[in-house]
Image (tube, rainbow, N blue to C red; front, side, top):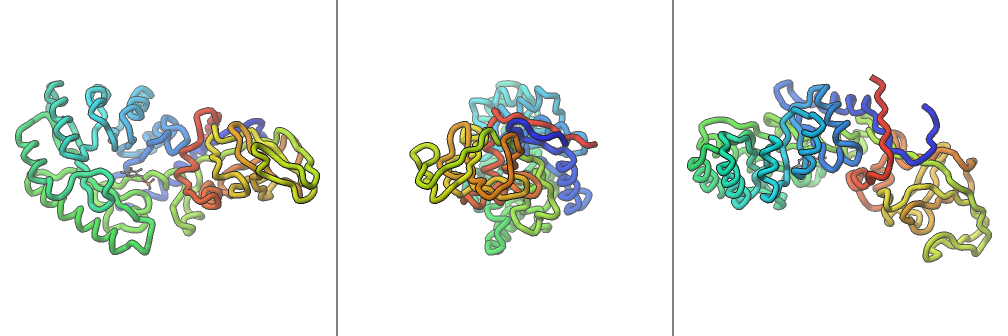
Length: 370
Ligand SMILES: *Cc1c(COP(=O)(O)O)cnc(C)c1O
C-alpha cells in the first residue's frame, strides 16, 4: 500500500464482508439481517457501504432520518429501507422515495395514516416500534388497542414489522433488565399478532443483542457497529475487523526548550526538551477537544504518541520526543491494530462517537481487495 500523503479515512470492504459473514454466522439461516447505515454508515460512507452490503445479501437497511434514505435511493439502492426516526414534515417525501417509517408514537401513527390516505396509498409498509424500557421512542403495550383501532379504520398502511430496542445489551450486569425487555416485547408482539391475524417480521437485537441474546434474534436483527468492526467487548477484537482506518501525515516537527509552550491558550508547557509533530487533523475533522492534553493518542512507526495541548480546528500536536520519525511520515489515528475503541476509551467516550464524528472534509479512500 502506498504511503499516506494527507488525512484520509480508508474504508476496507473486505473487512466489511468479514464482519457481515461473522454476524451472519451467529444467526440461524431464516433470520434476516438488517444493516444499519445511519450517520454516513457510522462515519464511513453510507452509499459505498450499502452498495457493498446489498451485493453480499443484506436483507434490509435502516437509517435514522428520511434525508439519509433519500441519498441511498438516489444512489440506486433497491433494498427496503427502514427510517428509524422520521418526522411528519418528511412523510410525503418518505412515501415518494419508498422508504418505510418507524411509527413510534400515537401522534406519529396518526399523522402517517393521514398522509398515506391523502396520497391514496394501499397497504403502505410501516414498522411499529414498541418501547420496552429504553424509554426513548416507542409505543407502549397499552397502546395496542389504540393501534388496532386506527388500523381497522384504514387500508392505507400495513404492518411489515414489529420491533423494539434494547437498552443495555452489551452490559452483562444488566442481564435481568434485558431479559425483561425481551419478555415484554414477546408479550406485546403476540398480542398484536393475535389481533392482526397475520405475523409481521419481529426484531429487537442490535449488535450486542446478536452476540449476547441468541434467544432474541426473532425474524431479523439490526446490526450497526458490528458490521463496522466493533463488538463493544474486548473478546470480539479478534473476531471483527475495523472497516475504517483514519490516517494522516506529519506536517512539521518542532523542538521545544524547557518552559516553552505549545498551542492555543499555552495549554502544554514543556518540562524538558520536547520534540513535537503537527498533524493536519483537528476538531473540524472530528477529533474533538476531549482528545487533547494527553487524553488521545496516535501511532507513528508503531509507537504510541500522545496529543499534547489543545486540539485546534485543523490540527493536533503530538509528543514525539522518543520516537524515530520525520516530516512526511505516516500517522495512524486509528486502524486495525490501534482501534477507534481504544482511543475513544482513553478520552472517555465510545467508538460510535469517534467514528461518526469524522467529518465530510476527510477524504474517503475505498479499499476493495475483492
Ligand atoms: C443505531 C441502532 C441500531 C444499531 O445498533 P448497534 O449497536 O450499532 O448495532 C439498532 N437499532 C436501532 C433502533 C438503532 O437506533
